[in-house]
Image 1 (cartoon, helix red, strand yellow):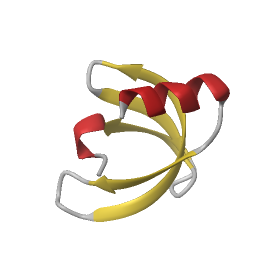
Image 2: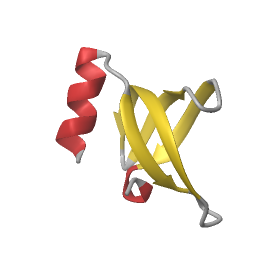
Image 3: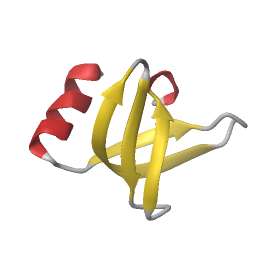
Image 4: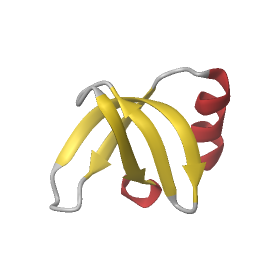
Length: 60
């Protein structure tokens, strides 16, 4: 998973993910990865149209 995330970040290509939120809600997102650090991704989320932080372990 981390390889795919880094590859999309390096190539600046949007990534489609299915994400499980903290409250158990599942959403499909299209994100542009900005940085990866310590179990988290900082990315621009096209669904919310803002920068968001995602837990890597919550990406399904």
